[in-house]
Length: 508
Image (cartoon, rainbow, N blue to C red; front, side, top):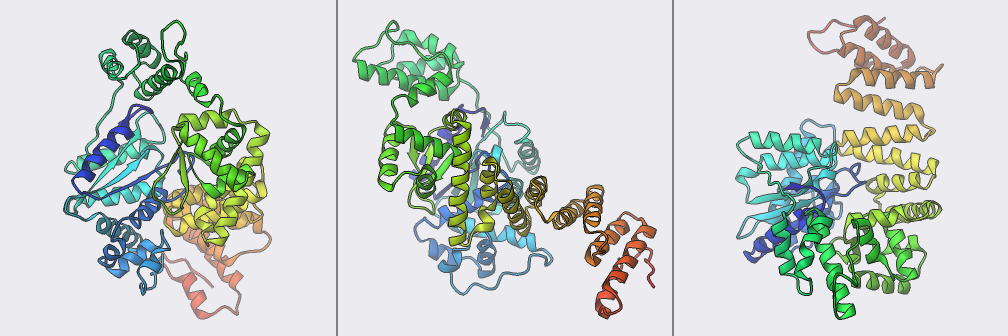
């Protein structure tokens, strides 16, 4: 289901999910987040966590073959405690490893959604889906025909180029026997806006035309304007167009909602805006510098004002969300730059500490790196970008891994040669041999005058793939020279082994 921001996609999806629940269908809801498109499999990690909050989740998990549950453990390590005695995870480089990994996630979700009626997996804000999650989503949708579940997704059609890959995947699925249906939501027309005015107590009917002009039919702005009018009616006991006028823009309307928030509430909003659209209690408290009692009291105020809402379920006891991304963006934009730096640093330190304690540094490394980067802490950001790249690579999220490694390079991480070699490996997997060649060449120059045998072997293999036999032979010989006479026969043989039906690279 697509449409521009504020057109009512999530609300319509919510009505559908409520209807599904009334029919005893199991629903698992997750979402993608702006600024987290480099967090591999983020929405599926959240979905698996939400699934473990369903009733009878342990019994459902035990119905899944153990080797599939083991694959899901890669994304959600806590599954080990729910299903003891799982087999050891197979190596990531074995044949068919990625397909087994995807099938494992799929089988676990199917089991968790199985019931009297087909279950529903709901993914909100798909325009911000990361490439790895999109690959997994496509895999699951292509196999939906024989499985008792359906997938509902919403995304912003105007969020290009971020949604371009999503559009291509949906077009592909639509061609394959109508596996996907796209519903386009449009703005409301004048008569539809008037219907909403008539159904809103305390709103004069003669304001309908003005409301339509101000909002241009965008449902989010319509609802917010109506709420402002009704709140004014409640406070003043009356309302006429003469003593209260609508804000001239959405920005002014959002400013109106922020008026009279306490000093502590403003500080928490600033910290929360830096953390992101969703935030947890502990990170908010630590970043804001407020005590537990002050944080709880301010959150109660923000929730009562409708600026923040509490998120049910999840892996943490206290999770919260901004009422709308536009609200978060406005608060962030108007936070002083110096305070933003301070808050980003505090958030990074809080996340890093909790990640170490929970043994989740790899999974959270991308977020930590982002906040250190925004705080101007280049050295720390570079190190966490490297860790994020290694974690993404271990989960086959190669596009994310490349972005992280390049970010670490840009921030002058000390292991420049190692990063270039990793980038070369990933570009080789992509089939971009030119980019891989450049990365390997850069690594070789950084290591000079030392000759690294492994790097020379990679360069030789790359030239061999390109049919550049003489250059391949040169690097294979350099590999043998670097290994030295003391190298094992197996090591030297590995250098000389070639693919069938290709010219042989000679060696001394």
